[in-house]
Length: 318
Image (cartoon, rainbow, N blue to C red):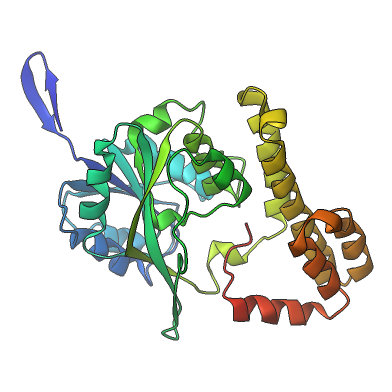
C-alpha cells in the first residue's frame, strides 16, 4: 500500500502488521521472529512491544533489520493494554498476532491474506498445533472444522479461536469503541474477537499454519480465578452495546453462564470446598451434560479432575 502527501509518494506501507508482545521472552523470541522472516508472503512489518523486559529481549530485537520496529514500555502492564499500544503503532491493512513463544509456518500469511478478497471478512483463522517441550503435539481442530461466516452466536457460546492463527482486517478495529479491554487480564482475546464477529465474517484455512507452545509459564495456566469474573463483565458490556442482546442471545448467554458456574465451582473445589462447589453448579445440572459430569466428579479428589483434563488434552480454561 502506498500513501500520498501533496501528490507525492511519501511512504510504502506494509500490507500486514505483525503484533508481537514480549516480556522477558529471550528463550523463545528469536525462533518466533524468525518464523515471520521466513514467510513466503514478504510484505509485512513486525511491531515488537517490549513490556519492560529485564533480559536480552531488546538485544535480540535490535539484531534484525528495519522490518522489525521495536518499542519498549516504561513499566510492565497488562497484556491487553500492551497489545493496544502495539496496534497503535501498526501501519498495515491487516493485523496479525504472534506471541513471543509461538511460531508460524512459512506459508501462513500467503494462505490467509487472499481470503480477505471477500470484503465482508474481518477475521481469518487457521488450524494450529499445540506442542510442548517433550515433543508432544496435538492439532487444535481435529475431527471438525470451526464454524465460519457470521458466527457471533457460536463464538460467544463456545470460543474456538487460538490467537496466533488470527489475521484481522484493520478496519474491523476502527469500528470498535475500544480494542483489547485493558481491564481484562484473562479473556481479552475472547472479548475482542467476539465483538468483531458481531459485524464481520470469520473465515478459516484448514491447513496447520502455526504452533502454540504449551509450557508452565503460559498465561493460560495462571490466574484461572480471573476468567469467570471477567466473563461476567464482558456479558454486561455486550448488553450495553448490542441492541436486544439479553433477549436475542439468551441461549448463548445461558451457555456462557453455565461455563462461569463450572469455573467458579472448580476454584472452590481446588481450595478444598467440594460441597460448596457442588451447590454452585447444581443449578445448571438439569439441562447440561457437562454440568452433570462435573457435579459427579466433585465427589472425588480434585487431583483426579486435573489428571483427566491433562489426559483429554484440554488446554484452555475458556
